[in-house]
Length: 431
Image 1 (tube, helix red, strand yellow):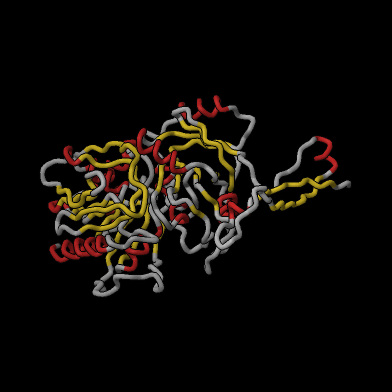
Image 2: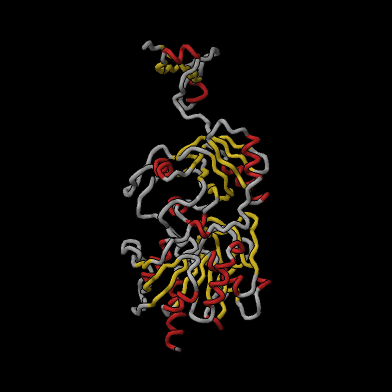
């Protein structure tokens, strides 16, 4: 095989690059030339082409507004459609990847540098990755963390999840903030034209789709794992009594279950379609309605289940569970412009005036004006004034629109689990 050399020249003007404590350059500019050679095969020489020593753009993100964003791919290849949302978290990309609430969505990280801590198997929030794809600005070329077992790219490829990088995430985020969440198509297939991908993005919609059925468990199971001692917190003053809780899996995160177990709960996780009669048959001390993806109006069967349980036992709703409770109590939900996704959302507790920094992930909210008398709005998002928490003392109901378990953080709202324990305790004593 014949080898030829391909030269690259970099010409540097020393008078521009190094000006401090140097003699004044002569009128004739001097340049330093640096050359590097790369092997070129006979086939390359014949075609006039040479493989570049860097990755070139090989993917496209086509949005329904007609904009086309060229990028470089990592993870899996192919073509995928989804709703594009942005997340403002600085850390915790692995927890985001495994959060079932992102089913059907492309997650764009506003933090530019992603992948530097690699991936480990302790931070999984569910049994698999449910999101449609990951969009980032800069993919770390190396990993540095004592728990790292593989790179982000390898992790996504093994799970058939697409990712792109070297795309202007700030410009896309501004577009989403101005125009709202957009449907997009991510593709590495050059055989598909831009027009075909644009048509795909405009013919698909996430509204009205039951995404919960694709992420829930298939059968009931018992959960026993607590938060590991190395990571536990708020452990002082916990009630030593055990409480039996049935948790409806609408896309539940493992750390919700770990926090409940750490507070002394014996947990049975059930599928989203589990009959209310079967739940009440085991006489639980409380019922948890978990987080989950998509439109709460697309799962009327879940709303009916909530209605049948209300008033029978104390209930706690988180995210999707909060929205389902809002509907079951007679309220309405609506789709937000671009939703809340991130680990830095300020929320005010209206009962005590305390401000909590919270982790949030939702595109829908409860309309407080639609709620009947007696339902109390307990928390408000300080960024836009939306409803972030509800309570209905007459029926022993409490709910939050955000994540009190918040892994990797913040932990300001962990006290909500203690409040749920108190609600079950007082109901049990009054019985």
